[in-house]
Structures are given as structure tokens and as C-alpha cells.
Image (cartoon, rainbow, N blue to C red; front, side):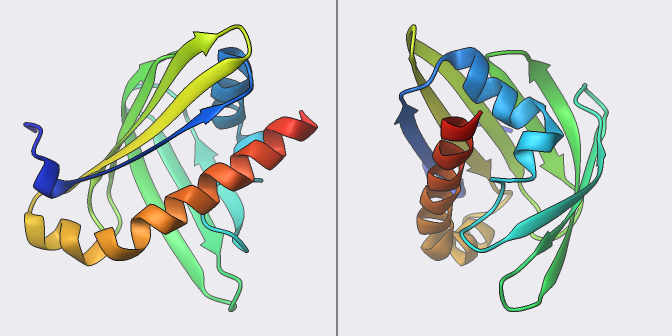
Length: 146
């Protein structure tokens, strides 16, 4: 899929934690379940096979009692650098999480959501960016306790 900013939502944050810790907070489902998703959500991870072709199946439990089934397949797993997957459940998009070491105790994490069409992207764009920021806030709280 070629890069097109009109079909992408990009969010990033610089975290004052080592690269290995930030990557580990994603790669270990015991940590991941505690921060994935917007504020107020909890997660049940049913399957997490972090390798190309591996499945990631989870239920996100919303604060208003909604349950959201998520099914994705990992495409790229480059430890400490990049994890990419394609969603099999709605909404459909490809996701890339980048990890970049900025210093011994500083890491940039980035989320890139890539949609097939501008219209699909625009439907999600208005709430994805603030929700991604909530996601990063939750990640920082988990990292502070690791």
C-alpha cells in the first residue's frame, strides 16, 4: 500500500523510558492488555501470536458496557523497531507501530493507521487522534509501574 497522508492517521509520542521497556509493553500481552485502547477500556486478549502471519484476537470492553471484537493478523515484526498488522474485523485498516530509540531513557512510539480510501479514513480521523493520545497516556502509566 503506497503512502498517502489523506488515507493515514499518524500519532506519536516521546516517552521517557528505554526502547526495550516501551517495546516490551506492547510485545508482552500481560502489559499490553493494561493500556491498549482509549481511556476507560479494558481488554481480554484471546490470542497474541507476535510473528508474521500470527493472529491477534482481543475483546475491548468499553466503559459503557460495549464489547468490541478485534481480529488482526501480524504482517511485520521487527523487534524494537516496527510491528505492523492488518485488521480482519471492522473498521478495516492496516496499522504500523514504530519504536525509535532517542536516547538511553527516551523512545518515540508512533501509530500509523492506513486506510484503503480517504472516505474510510475520514470516518475514523475525527476521534482516532484524541483516542490515540489517551492510549499513549495509558501506556505511560503502565511503563511507570513496570
